[in-house]
Image (cartoon, rainbow, N blue to C red):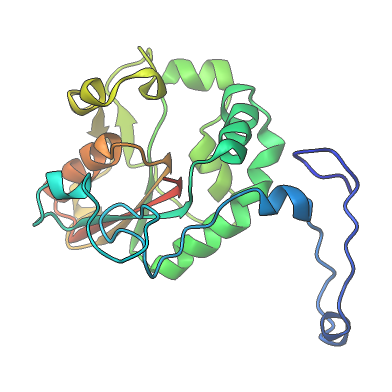
Length: 226
């Protein structure tokens, strides 16, 4: 097989322990070199509010600006470095749907570990679905998870992308979402809310506010990158 990212041949050697386990042989979709270019965030020392990588488990300066009594926190798996930037260019902006497989197993496993009652994803606008053809977040969760289409965007056309806005402009963004599911499905439920990148947290917290206002007990965000 070839690596989905660098297109070099993948040389995978199964261990004796794996062979003796009689499990199916793994079929890696990314080579070791590319995988090692991503930087995992150590959960034991990450910011408990947003999942940011740091050396001790305390609220980072960004999270200290948010209300401390909201039943929301975010878990992030990787630091947004050059390798992650290149990945999103290929997946999200050039529309290479195949590379969802690089992180799909890890994202699905983490959702299961978080053990929520309801899994929701941050939606994309209708115009984005037309031009890109898929929601990059649900792309990771299509195989094996029963996520609910509970949120939709209030606008059909996407304006200036969040990635192109300054922090001040991001923070001033009005509520962009509406609920498209019955509130009875949220009442006293622990919701897992999945998105791709946590930057300022404005997008995730807008969605979390809406979900909590409609009866959820708590919201745990999960993002691939921080």
